[in-house]
Image (cartoon, rainbow, N blue to C red; front, side, top):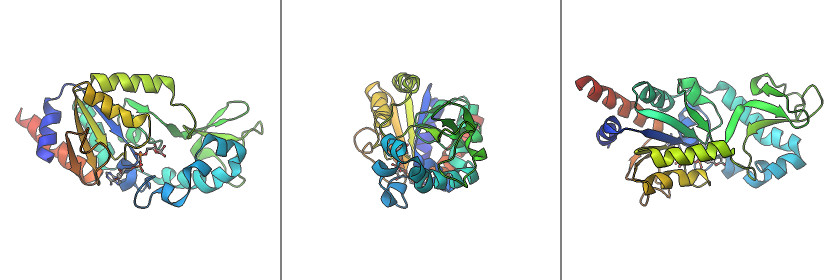
Length: 248
Ligand code: APR
């Protein structure tokens, strides 16, 4: 499977990746669903819906955002993020569409990353709109506030909010144009991100999944699943791609 994926990637003309929380698990960031998933412990409708945030921002900061800040502040890219950046360097991957808000693809060196669900690196003030980096936010009083007194919110897409239209339309276009869609570490259960690989498949692309477990895409949309941890699998795939490139 590793050799097959490396062969497919080496001969492809236009590769796009779609990534999800599973790609950052080896960086110490918990996923949302499945083993150790955040939504197994807290109800997303109570803590990650925009209405929940607007009605009690202090509670959402306390239970969800504070913990995310602690983890994301510490996290470093793993071999899967680095492998995708290396595939870009080799001219194989064009763009990454990520559902993650942790910024680890950019930290690994990927230059064209669509942050489908926004990013956690920045906060903006609900009143004046002023922005500030999340790492500079003081956590002694929650919810944290802007100098103007307004409440800060992360620039992530909450449930109940729209995907930024420019991200949605560009992702859909890329999904139609690519000849390989590499889907890494997503449960493919949240819309509209989950339709991206389906668009690719319907447009004639090959869909390759890397995941520790099968997903709803696995036996219907994906051409094949590389079953294993993203960092380890990507390291092996990239090593094989480099070997093929050296051999010409
Ligand atoms: N390597 C590869 N895959 C892994 C690993 C790993 N080390 N660990 C877990 N996985 C897989 C799981 O099997 C699962 O399929 O990663 C997937 C994680 O799924 P989710 O937690 O549902 O993450 P994601 O698909 O990104 O969620 C989509 O839901 O609430 C949200 O907004 C949040 O962007 C997120 C969206």
